[in-house]
Length: 172
Image (cartoon, rainbow, N blue to C red; front, side, top):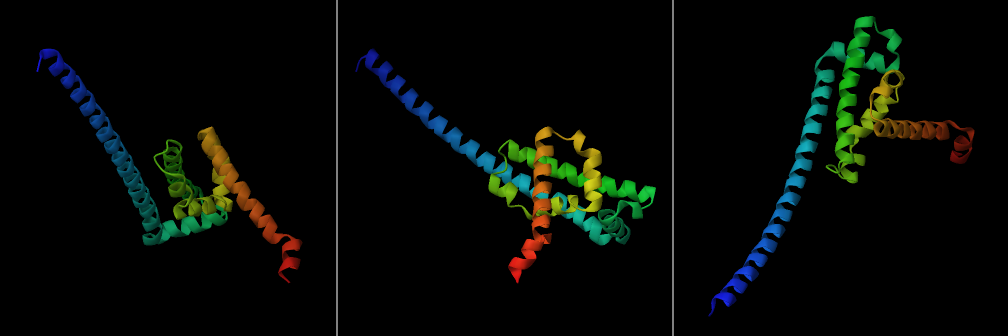
């Protein structure tokens, strides 16, 4: 075996090991992405659980939340600040989830199939939530604002369809 042949074999082996290393790195990146998605979901669930625990465990906060959703004017100035602060924390959580979806950390199914998101949009569609959104929608990114406006529009159209006389006559 001469030196030229040995050098060629070394080049072939180097190429094979380089390709194997690239495949291994691709698998590691895929596993890391899945792990990151799972961690992101766990963090979102923990964050939403903290909000809900706060509402459940504290009667005053629950009362402020309930009244604020129905009519913010029933709250005094301090309670309005508490209501809007809690709503702002929830909005921040939803923005983070939307950003993760936009960056493809969360799949469409993980984002759109999330019950917490549906609850958030329902809260946002309340009297107090709509007031909060009107006051703060200009501080969020345009794509998120459009996303929320579309969701609210869908809910409004569903309500109109349910309330229309045609839906009453078709149910008879």
